Length: 325
Ligand code: PCA
Image (tube, rainbow, N blue to C red; front, side, top):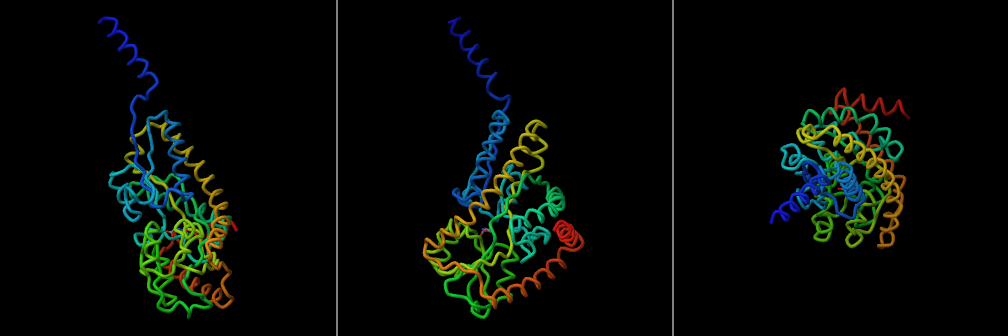
């Protein structure tokens, strides 16, 4: 009996010396499908943190809006229902126009420019989030945004009355200015929305069209390259402060790596998914000169509107970005 107790004590001690002093599981809701590169980068980030903190913080990702729908993720993190999450940054544009800095049409249309714009905007976005008790970790761009339709579209006139799936204020405004009817739908729901006719068109990346197999319902993808919106990963600041400096350093390191690999994957995924749309039977083309000209005009209107709404801070972001070009 005595020996047994000794043995048990020894085993417990051994276990204690390898297991972390305390271990927490951080559930991380994500809005997009598990196969999407953002979700994969998020899963790698989670592993990096779990390994790097020696298991003190174990991050468990929940893609596809399975834990919280995209629209509810920020609130869930702010209110501490979950400590960490990922969301489309411009999804909060209705709350504060500054969040829409990356969805201003034709302001930054390449990966290179998108990085410059992010560099210019990041300090402001970090401040806005900090005021909401949120700590920004990293952000990764989606590939350039193009327009999807059921029918061929040569000019804005052809868009009249089309039901247009929107994902933020900018996309809804684009629909209004082109005579379409905006309907806000999460990416996780779009295959069904197109199949049932709730929506007939959208602006998004080749990546999202590919992930959701939109060729089952839509036939045209126009490579408009309107902007590159970002997903970002953020932590409830109380949870952040509540963990050790060492763990925060690990999370910062993993976040930097995720931002770097995410950008790389986004670039790689662009050509692959656009080819995937073609293979699915879609016509993939540059917009006609007429359409391009009309969209540029609409873009100018939207840029003016955004600058007006986003005030001095918005103007500073655009000026800082232009100074880098
Ligand atoms: N895909 C996301 C946002 C931008 C993108 O390319 C979506 O359509 O919801």
